[in-house]
Every structure is written in C-alpha cells, then in structure tokens.
Length: 285
Image 1: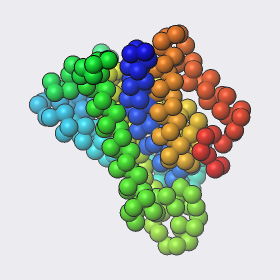
Image 2 (image 1 turned 180 degrees about the vertical axis):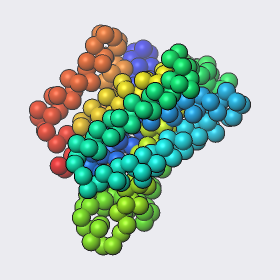
Image 3 (image 1 turned 90 degrees about the vertical axis):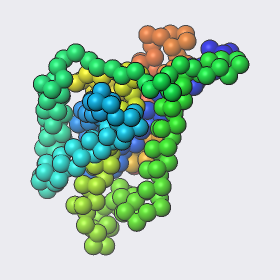
C-alpha cells in the first residue's frame, strides 16, 4: 500500500510536469492553430539555462525564473521574426519553419554544451525525503508538484482575471471576432507564443534534477505533451492540465506491474479516449 501511495505521489509530480509542458503547447496551438514542433527544443533550452545559472552560483529559484524567461524570450523572437512573417502563407510552411527551428536550436545547444548530457543536484533543502510515518516522500517531488501547481494557477489567473488574458482566451476561441474588435492580433499572438514557450522552458528547468538534459531531451517530452494535448482536447487549456495529471499517475502506477509498458500506456489511453470521444476529454472542436 505504501508503494502504491508513493507511486501516486510520483505520478502527480510527473503529471504536473506534463501539464505545464502541455499547457504551453495548448496556448500556442489555440492561438496560432499550428503545432509547435519547436516546443521540445524550448524545453531543452529551459533545462540548459537552469543548468548554466545554477553552475555560476545562482539560487535554484532564480535559475527556474531564468529558464522560463530565456525560453519565453526565444519564443518571442521565433514568433515575431519567423511565424509572423508566414501568417498569410501556407500552413505547411509554418510547420516546416517550426520543425527547422527545433533542429537549429538543438545543434546550437550541441555546439555550446557538447553531446554529453548534463544534470543537476537539487538544493540541499530540497534533497532527501520526508518521513510521513507510513512512507518516505522525496522533497523534490513535492517541490515539482507545488511549482507545477503554482505555475498553472498563475496562468489561470492571467487568462481568467486580466484583460490580456481575456484577449488570449478570446483569440483561442474566436480569433476572427478578436480582429473585428480592433485588438492587435499580432501582438496577442507574439505574447501568447512567448508565454507558451516560457512554460516549456520552466518544465525543462523543473525536470533537470529528475531527468537530466541533452540537446534532444525535449523530443520525448514533446511527444508526451502532444498526447496530453490531444487527450485533453484541442483548444482546452484545462483539459491539458487534467490529461497531464491523468497520464502521469497512470504511467507511474503501471511501473508497479509492467515497467516496460509505462510509455506504451500513454498512447493506449489516448487511442481509447479518442475512439470513445474524438474531441478528447474536454475538447470542443
């Protein structure tokens, strides 16, 4: 029973990581209606920014803020000087541009950091485990869950309680109406892309002590984020969060009986849900 509880906690922490990653992807997909194939590369950028800041002595909290900010800035540049110039063009051109951008980012990371992966030991206060009497709970997993929950709530407050958030939400649901209201859709798209990219970078920073990082480490995470996005429902920000937690817990519990099938389970769940309801869990389109 203790082992099951431990796996559920582990699943919640990993699920929060998936949710943060997928939430950023959902924002970008909703606004631009294009899958961000550079999302995994932005995840890696966040991990490396966090690693760099930590190695020069910055507190871990500052390193995480840097991971978010660095990826958000890069996302801002990608949208402003790349996607924005292709908005009136072919959908395929935008997809190919993002795919090419991901490859460029990966090779730049290889040139700077080499092909050997990097990792990071959590700060002393986040190391070890807490004795709850019936189980030992790793402090860093608790930290991951709390940071994930905090960032999700922060994005929710931004989207639900601020004017710019209302514009982003409207842009996701009714883009044409937003343009008719005179809102600068170009600025809205750039800010939304930067926010989504920042979420990917933050996920990379959080995952660094858990998974390590290399130039291509974001590819697996991006694949899972796409599954979470589809499972939660395209266009549903809250569906991405719910699906991320569901996938994390299900994957973690599966390792108790069939560790080698934990990754396969992700795609099985997605397939079953889509067969039952093609719109996903919370999708409207």
